[in-house]
Length: 71
Image (cartoon, rainbow, N blue to C red; front, side, top):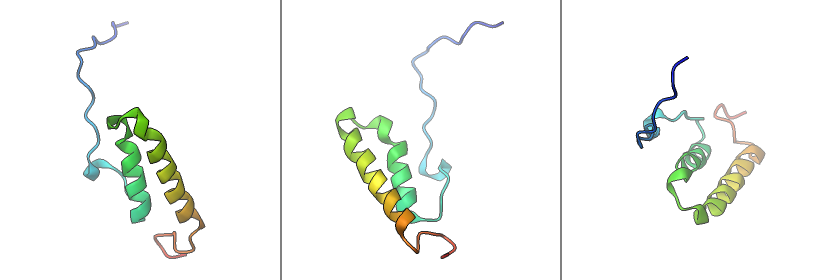
């Protein structure tokens, strides 16, 4: 069994916009992108960002045009 890697203070690279999966729904992709960046923002901003993402995702789920295929 090998020893755990030493903490060298380096973080894993964060995904770039190009690395993130897309849903085909711009509002959803934007909300998910903001959530992915949440760790880089002050904790005091987390609640607002989470609430905004929740509202966006909920609205898209209720929207009849919320499907990339238009169903």
